[in-house]
Length: 320
Length: 262
Ligand SMILES: Cc1cc2nc3c(=O)[nH]c(=O)nc-3n(C[C@H](O)[C@H](O)[C@H](O)COP(=O)(O)OP(=O)(O)OC[C@H]3O[C@@H](n4cnc5c(N)ncnc54)[C@H](O)[C@@H]3O)c2cc1C
Ligand SMILES: Cc1cc2nc3c(=O)[nH]c(=O)nc-3n(C[C@H](O)[C@H](O)[C@H](O)COP(=O)(O)OP(=O)(O)OC[C@H]3O[C@@H](n4cnc5c(N)ncnc54)[C@H](O)[C@@H]3O)c2cc1C
Image (tube, each protein chain N blue to C red):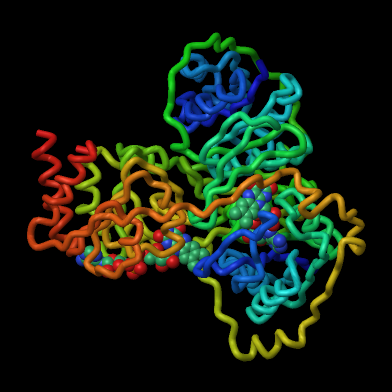
């Protein structure tokens, strides 16, 4: 069977969930071969093997952390040369898309970004994209070269599948461009203990209606009762009530959870662009005319400061 | 010393309008009002600020690749304060993908001459966010992308990139390609004076032959990706909407329990 390269997104050896989703999707097209780079790359092998990787290429070098994007492109290109894959899959993070794009250009291949589904087709893999703020669904194919496709988080349910996961060291020689953009310092984001926003099964978001940084405690309490991640609209972020890293929407994170609960959010097109593919959508808003209600499966017209705490209590009671 | 900045700006269908696809599965640009992609206003703004904070002679050129109407995007950028504009327009560009777009941009940037390219973080239609990285790869210069803060000094560009797991401080020598996010600082509104001045600023028009690009390298035929189908998403079936009369939270809990979320 043809091999499919999967770029591994990991933090010091801890593989992030979107990569496991990619391994699941890759198996529809061929045999997944994973590429793990940087500090802790070697430690990723066992979990990758449990999810279907027949082979795991690893390479550790300081360049991956010290310089932006290009060293990773060099490594992925070396992996493409080594296996001549049927496709290359990369998680659709901001960095993932940049890596994928530069790789695609170098190997003279088309690129599809932000796929939400993937299947084998007669002329190579066919990707589904959800475009124009999720108002259209397109089916797209790469017509030149080796398909390079970036896939959004939550596009597939992770399935375990044992495979050999044979670890092999990748030989990489860095290009001259690799050291062009230096990372002079890095401040890791502090963990909140809550699930990662783009990976969470449930997201509870607050908007301008939350009316103050201190009031976000109401949103957090609901999120914690449900084991959810916390999101925010740009209005809430711009007001300084919540960190930008939690912004949902066109210029924030795009989320696709099982359940999205929007509180005090009107539902502007740019916000919808980041959450419209959620499976179930719920909103609490005191304005019955708010556009968010056009999207919901269930909506409550009311003051969030009455509705949300009552809901939180009820969730806690029911969960015992 | 002088600093030549090229700002890439895209003309896009208005996101608040009724965007859709034409019969050839390209974006229908005839039926919808277009405008300067709002995220490129942030790029123009940062170029203007770099200029205002610089002791050097700075010249800001705005560049777009797009149909006749794309001149509107250039006018807006000129009225904000850019010095001159380049419009790459050619019928053979219809249906160009990201690879082709980056080729045209890179050739035009080289022809214009540059020390710094400033782009938006993503367009508001394609939203891929890959064109700046592709242009950097093609030009063979550093990419310093997705910056929420940017500064140019002493022949180098520095900036902050807020990533998924960390916030990074970046540095590269010029020439370089930068892209900026909507966190970089609100874009200014054109003043009346700016709008009047923009009418007199030069707009050059180039076609593919001016850039030494063959028609087969771009357009729908030259695209390395093929859109096979585009369908409007079925409207969501109307949801249940209740008015809170004291029990709204409990009713919502009942619904969530019914859906097995609790
Ligand atoms: C280029 C660009 C990119 C953008 N990117 C994003 C993005 O990524 N994400 C994003 O979210 N936005 C984005 N925006 C902004 C977007 O257009 C909206 O301005 C924003 O989403 C509004 O946030 P909001 O819904 O919280 O606020 P508003 O629109 O002000 O809505 C607040 C809502 O809260 C309700 N409310 C008030 N008080 C209460 C209460 N006590 N109880 C219940 N309901 C209450 C009101 O009825 C109202 O519906 C972008 C805009 C542009 C131009
Ligand atoms: C819904 C949709 C989906 C698409 N999917 C794909 C795909 O999967 N693969 C693919 O190869 N192409 C795709 N395209 C085509 C692609 O969007 C265009 O080729 C586009 O010109 C470049 O990509 P972008 O708009 O996503 O730009 P981005 O990479 O999102 O834009 C970033 C920045 O690049 C600059 N820029 C981009 N285009 C121009 C321009 N024409 N003139 C001046 N500056 C510009 C701007 O500064 C902009 O802020 C898609 C287009 C649409 C409308």
